[in-house]
Picture 1 (cartoon, rainbow, N blue to C red):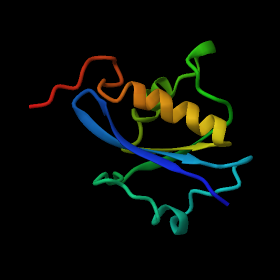
Picture 2 (picture 1 turned 180 degrees about the vertical axis):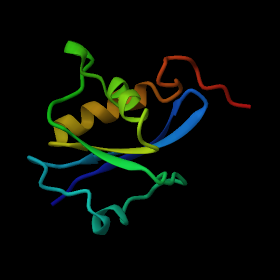
Picture 3 (picture 1 turned 30 degrees about the horizontal axis):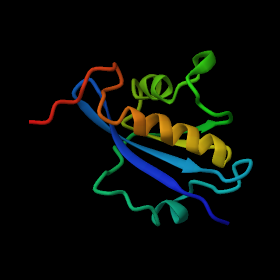
Picture 4 (picture 1 turned 60 degrees about the vertical axis):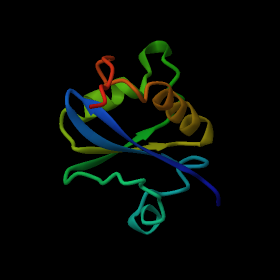
Length: 115
């Protein structure tokens, strides 16, 4: 079974959080269990102490209020890090693409300054 994952830091205010987007391949077949997660190249990112896994069943396309950024903003009010477990590859790609397009912005839309 193939899959994929995408790891990045997102900023809620000035606090950096680690987010992992996990491709469930088909109907959540690929599980984000420790044995699978250790194979992910985290690119220097580390999970915080308080991590949640959120299953995402439909593509996040910004329509009808479905946005990965809004989902993350809500989850990161209570958790340090988030694993977004996409139901299938189409959903995974929609989440990954939205996050890539907004990689230079905080969750509130303000730019991330580099000092």
